[in-house]
Length: 572
Image (cartoon, rainbow, N blue to C red; front, side, top):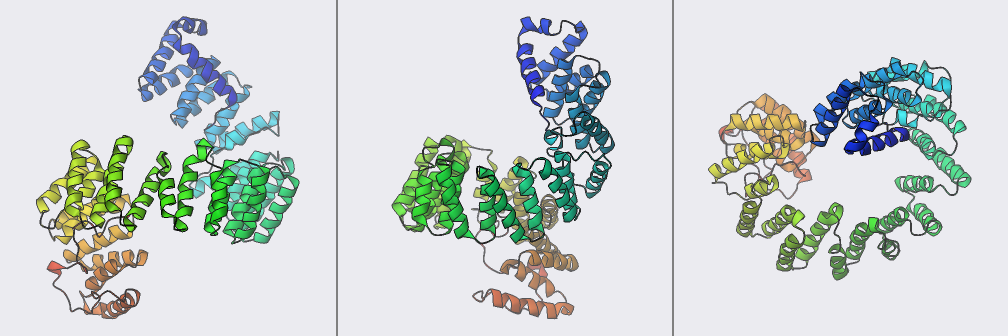
């Protein structure tokens, strides 16, 4: 979103004044009383969360005024609420009443690009560039990258129709469009134009490097980066780009050497220290990793990452007590859950399940915002360690205190016994009422019904809805094909299960397809080939056998399932 400094200063000043009733009248001394009331009503609507009303009122007032403060505020409100058409209407009016006001032209250029009105955009850009061919247009073109190929072609054509201003920002925008159009050489030419005008802009250099990479010219990239870093030895961003380039091109030792020098040049830089620590871990240089990561501990922004990856390094060295200590120090939301999962795995592997369960109970007290997650983690540990009844009691407790948490309800559903059909239906329907567009829940309920061979019409509708929300996901296609098989819709079942198996060649999906192919002798060759393939990939699975045509009114799942909803859910 375009936010000029001038706009920010107007907006901040305006909002401060609008809150002061004494200054309000002074601010609008030249504004009609009715207009003043409209502006006040708009601000009041925004303050009360009635955003749509505030946007509409401001737009209506802006189109009737010449006051730059009101216009600026109305435009800011439109932009903040992604009202592109309204914002463009305001800028057109603003330019009409003050044709030479440059900020308004900047806004109009940006909004016309966002609205795909490329003719107006180029006309406005031409006017701006006629004042200053080297105008900084980076904020105008920021975020402009049409998804539709036709829009990209139209935008590129419009930009190429402009006079040869050789403006760096426009050259870079054209370069991006040319890359997407499959014209890398022309794109490089545009980037070189931009670099001739602004040779020190890192984004231009890295764009050139990425275009070369798309052409597999890694040697040219390495040479370009070496030359630019030699010319700009204080450019940290460029050096970090080179390190990541080296890592992607399997040169970890050279990348590590670069990071070591950078850490000495930019001492205490969190970004460099963190990357150096991670690369050291990947290269099994744990002492180096610890040396870099420990330096992050005094930096608030990086302290959780430091503790987390120090824990990873300690775990890989089998320093279990040290790893536990580090993971327990991770407190920030972003890594807290990952750290708790790591702790759960470590503690369980070291026969300390009960200690871990007690610890998680205490964590619920100390981290009430994580209560739902911690209950789920405890329940999963109990379930994985053959204590499903205890897990279910724990989830009952959790749902009693957090009754409308979908994840908790879903976890309890997964613990239902196959003979609890009525409870399965009631709980699943409650879950879908809370989260109706979750493809995981839709697919799981559909598969549970299919496994019990009941309500197949409902099950298919659920699976079809899940497929619309998450198209062509193998788990959903498997469910859909499995239900069609039970309904004796063999052609659809085979096509759908083929697609599922092609996307994810698992044993379960493969066995569903084997069963479907047994519906007709014309598929015997394909069925036998698939069975041999499954035997080769899953040699320890005794379920894989050549079967006669089954009774499709009761298709069995190829392996026993303890719960009707555990086997065929989309992985989180």
